[in-house]
Image (cartoon, rainbow, N blue to C red; front, side):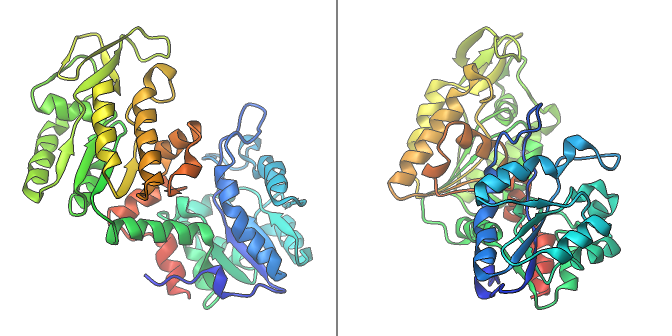
Length: 400
């Protein structure tokens, strides 16, 4: 896929309207607790400013249901953005209408303006063309740098591109995401290992089916592993299980065998007597968990086996934790796998961390700079790997 990026454009004297993904977590004092997504956008912003252009940023934050609400205001991100850019950032209290129009019109080269939350208008998520047109009127060129929302056909991520024919392009985040996903899907060095975790088989079935055409090894951990164990006749106690997906789990195992893909399931489990950070714990064979106990992490034998497979891999895709890593007692499996990925990367393997909880885990363990690439878009990356068309990619390409 040939993609047009900001490197192929000179922004001197231009106002660049950039769709970024500043959907970041805030604490009770409305301070940004994880600035990863804001940091990711900085190189794109700097390129445009260095060219002599100005920047108008638009994003969503959270899921406001009933119009404007202060807890979802993007003004809470202004200080973090200003610090990262090392320059003041202007803020418009609306994303269309007079506050935005006036602020955009007055913007000078080298200046940065952040618009208020796009989702304060229901027209954003509905992909309303008139709303997209109002946004488009603010800038001279359009840059999509929000991979995390590329799978949504929203006004600011996809529909808007039609108003910038010949003046639409991707920022560095989008280009990096697409190039790295392509590398994993179509240019993977072997052995290629995919690590799938998370709660439900049903959430990952499409990506598992697609990856089975590509990978040599498929490691399955997290809550979804217990459905596979139950399907094979194991006793999983009170562990999470999709009882209506047992046949599906067996068909996945059968399909893998037919395709020559080795599926690795956990052999032991760290269990809790309740879903709680202070739960009593034990370690058992994963097929023999007593009633009243629930599996909350892979056990040490599983972690060791999985690490060995990862260490021998040349390409690694990781999506989903091995257990409830947010709780100290149940983080060991996820941490051990993360450490194995870091070690394999240091030896020359290519490692793509697939957004969402996997990205949160490598950030929590401070390994983000020791893997090849950490995706900023969990859902978008999954859909891309599943083979679905992303509206935020398709419509920008059509507007080149």
